Image (cartoon, rainbow over all chains, first blue to last red; front, side, top):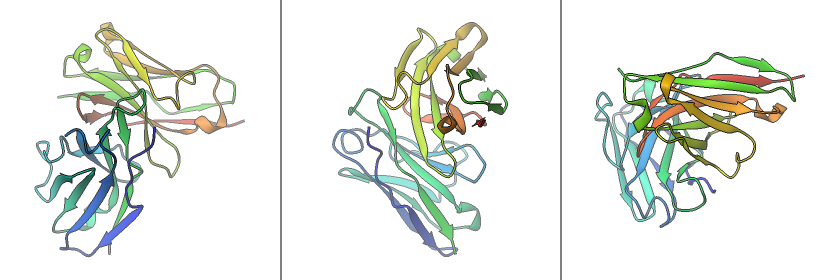
Length: 112
Length: 116
């Protein structure tokens, strides 16, 4: 079961906006609106940021937004802050394989 | 308040068995899937498998099928991840998460270290 494709790293300066991509296929990202994004700080459990492509759970900053075009989902973080430095993972429903869920490989965000 | 509380860190030798747990509270435990996630040192997240405590329906990733056993006891709102014979390569952090169409609540993680 292949992982979704994310860039290994992205960086940005405080106040800037960055976008992290999550590429899949029509059997996962492109075919269903069940894409989630998670943030993980070092030594901490992952935290849900976005679900169903573009929905924010209560308590998640408006600076985090999600979108999808074709087989690629994206997470945009606006107004970068130092505390945004973390690893970010996408996950999607998939019809490939026996397990219906798959993660991306993760992206390390560095705030310069 | 929804909470998932995992059992504590474990240090084991290769070949030993192990069961770690994940106790849910603050919601209807039987009605949500519980997923288990492996994170090897310095690596990304991997779904290992899921269990639906209501009827014990269990799904495994091909990478973990036959390597681990996922179970649940809904009477005590606890899910389990079990190894029959640990290997050094099982050294990792393991997370449980409540999962519907997203993993909205996560346990704090259980660090498993396997070393001779």
